[in-house]
Image 1 (cartoon, rainbow, N blue to C red):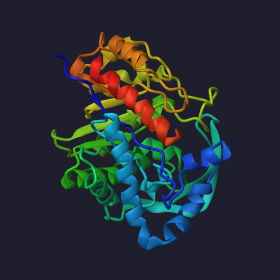
Image 2: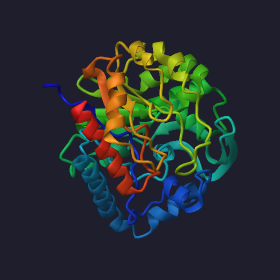
Image 3: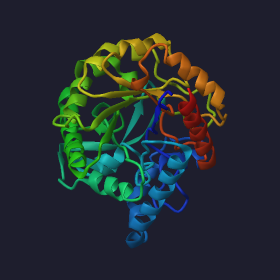
Length: 356
């Protein structure tokens, strides 16, 4: 009898409405777009409201989104990033050197969006208060399955902040990677066995990824033992709103351009989109040293995938990669979806992974 394929999620999940912090997905549902600094400005006010009750609400929310994932069949869930207003800026708020009061206006990602960003105005360093340990432990304590913890990667942080100090991209990348490594090692010490660095910018900035980005990723995972899964997520980008068919994505051919460097890099699993872009599955043959987390349901479409269509694509994928190295997941985080639809998509995906 075949062993069912492992299932996981990538990061964000729709926040319950009682969570005290609004995120960019909430903004998208309200306004039809995420290209706003409103949640960045609002965060400080949000966290001060009824502050004493916040921790109970965050734990309640983590339990709720973990329970949904687990009953859907997910074997390695995330906490849904329920504490974060923005998965990138949340990390940066725990570092010195970032200015969140005086934002800088920028046009980003090949003109895909325009907004005001936190600024780097002095050397970046870690406050030595490992927020990740607190957040991970609080979630793991309410989960019956091992929780994966996610962190933004250096190149992606660089893309969504304004550098007004370093003016040296490799140097800034290395500084950010060192702060991430401190969180990663603290997570390892706390017992986390699935740690994911998100680097969607690799797909948009292949040259930077190859020049210094891979080195930064390896720095993030420096000192991590083999007992811990070192995971990298590289998606092609979010739209502004659900069912936006014309949003500007990264070129999926970037996976092919990066494949050799990915396969040689010092991490264990690579997470890629497939539902949105339908890769040439020969791509999987290029990952001889990596497990592949394979995007199998769309995260920005309200259309519910059938079990049969997910099974068909997974069967095709298994013609190009060993069964024990294929992991099934959504393309990216599920924050844009209504929670009931997110659960339906995960359930269909997990049923497919169990029978393929």
